[in-house]
Length: 424
Image (cartoon, rainbow, N blue to C red; front, side, top):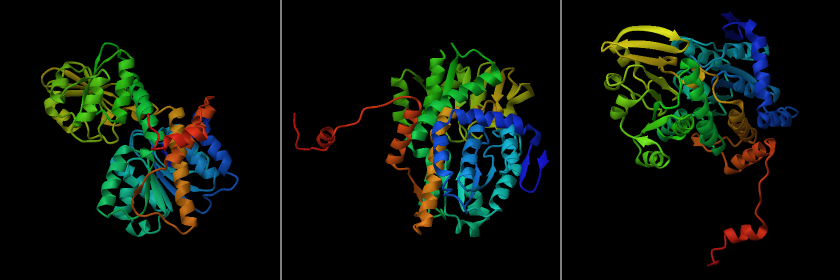
């Protein structure tokens, strides 16, 4: 472990390896790099401190260094004990970023890192899961009054923050980056879909074709996983509690059933719900010998690991991020990534091309908070959406970087679209 007053990372000597990966990500993130080139001259974040709690990946590093290039003082921690990539953390530390993150930390260390971020008295927060925001509200209440605002990256965090705002407990405004169309309909669907299967394959090296893959939850993330699994030749089974989501899965060619029934036939189980206790003791007991279980939801409570522990006769690590549980009934169950985000713990997270738009939204949302503060018009202490205009402008810029062009409506077509007097 390498530690100074301004950072704590696994090994600062990994910095050169991390720098090469960051440069690779930069070459695949033209939208965010375009934004960096636009704003690094004017430095709109000068005088502002951003505390971030987000997966420390090469893509996150591009965002962090974009903030720095545009004038911000940045302090960072990882938002999941197993998602930090140590070489990336080292590269950021070597570049003067204050960062407290390493792979494999325990829960106590996780919150220590968040505390270190909040001790600098930030003006802005950036979250993935809202742990930093919750910590600020619970332990640093006097700081909340000084915070200009924050942003939230993921579905679970947004849901909890909306509940917090509804109860009047949110002390500063938060922009729901996750709810931007250029985030949830791309990052959550295509990013999670691809990176989750990437994590499964790295941890197991199994053939997906012909397997019964059970996807718990058919929201944006679950849909992405199901689509990619189906594309790899798997027989996809979906479990759901929402009738409309289950109906969509059915009409898109998936089998739908209860987890009680799916547990008997599944070969690979992937949870993507954001809710605890999706797979519990009664399900483990029904699983066939050799079943593989993993999670791609934000927290590690979707798979009830204490239940699994209570059923084990023995346990051993058979591959990286792959633990074999031999149950008392003689069957083997394989738990990947300790039940944490398999796409980040066992793989590298979403592809850079997908995170390009998500992190462009993060930058522009933080800029929105700063501009409002400079004008003396702080936003209301609730959860705010990203504008449709921003969504469309980012999508247009992304299309342009990909070499695509689209049509535009004529004045006559625009007028026709709103002409309620036009008939057949």
